[in-house]
Image (cartoon, rainbow, N blue to C red; front, side, top):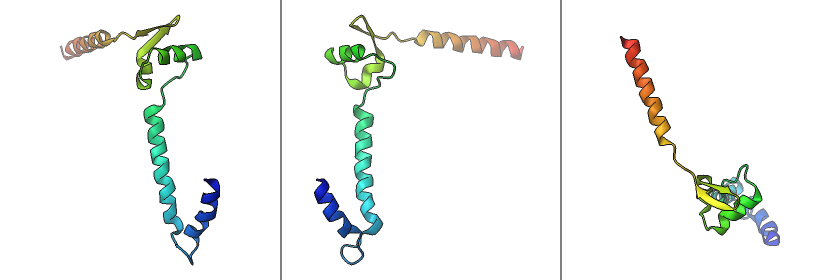
Length: 103
């Protein structure tokens, strides 16, 4: 592949032959967009996770995009609990404070 690219690429840039000049870079930019999109969609978020935890997540057949929703405890995979109730309490406290300020 490298031999093909290195022998064909100069013809695209040369003014006497195909004369694509800078337009040929659009081909490479397009390929780069697809590669970045693939990495974004397929790479799991594994920050601060040990290799054993990542291995446990893969063996339990959890999709890579959902790794951040699970906790691994001694090789046992558990789903994280949602904490919506705490946010509602904070909103109620803010409303009470606003009412007190108005009085």
